[in-house]
Length: 388
Image 1 (cartoon, one colour):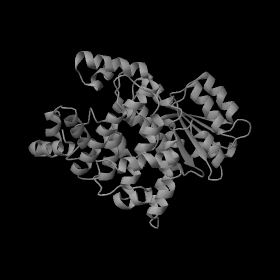
Image 2 (tube, rainbow, N blue to C red; image 1 turned 45 degrees about the horizontal axis):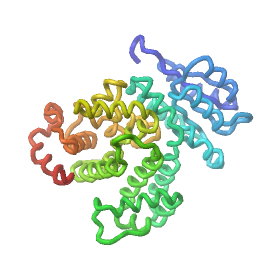
Image 3 (cartoon, helix red, strand yellow; image 1 turned 90 degrees about the horizontal axis):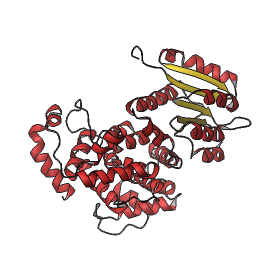
Image 4 (cartoon, one colour; image 1 turned 90 degrees about the vertical axis):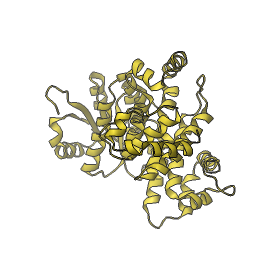
């Protein structure tokens, strides 16, 4: 932590004093960089929240009076930019369902200190990268998007079991028939070129593999959660087609983490959907200026809000606990760092997206990444894969 930099404020809430004392002891090494507060119950926490703002709130689910779900709903309404994390046991399924609309992250109890600490560090790092308070509030006020973690993490559990079958994966996906239908729509699209129509999720898993299905489920859940609000000049069908083209090209060109790169390609523009839903006036204003000035959307977004849809999308995915490889590629797909090397997923998503939008990538970045000599060949491959 640099001298003069403010400590990040973290509030822990539980109705058992011994739990709070244990957290205080386990996290004592963080006192130099975190301003930690420990509240015995939701009512005491609300008193603290009425007097000051916190960057992160970590709450237990099961508390007398106001439980964790009700408490975090109050936190969301009072301070929408605050990151909300809930700790819950496996026996609290009904309460967890109520917490879905108000919690950004779910951690299982008992939670080991390293997991808790790394989760808080990651969301704080995200806040450091998103400088504009308006953007933080856009992310923090998203109410019905955090349904993703339940499906996403349940799918992770099944895929982590080496004994899981295509039938097991299909059973998870088919719990939400709307999402299952969306996955089948994507599977049967021209992008995969399957020889025959697939009519069951189980057969889709068998044809495309579990990792690809996981990526399609994740993107389908997000698109479904963000669907419903229209924006002038925005085509949901065109958006999805562009995302799929980029994802397919990225997976063919990337040298490592191919499935994560595929998911990053699918989700690289998800920040646009967040803006349409949470900041429609800003989205429309940017669209108007793009049409008037003929400039890239992200440049105008930076001018008007200090951030682009790339950072907003990466921010949302980070809050949900999506893998860092995906988050970085989404957040940096317009302004990637020079420190990358070779055909890193972040680099490839940037390169493919630039070509898909009719732009050439920054030659200085190609030099820094050590791929300037390969660019002519790579660009031809990408153009063929994109069919542009």
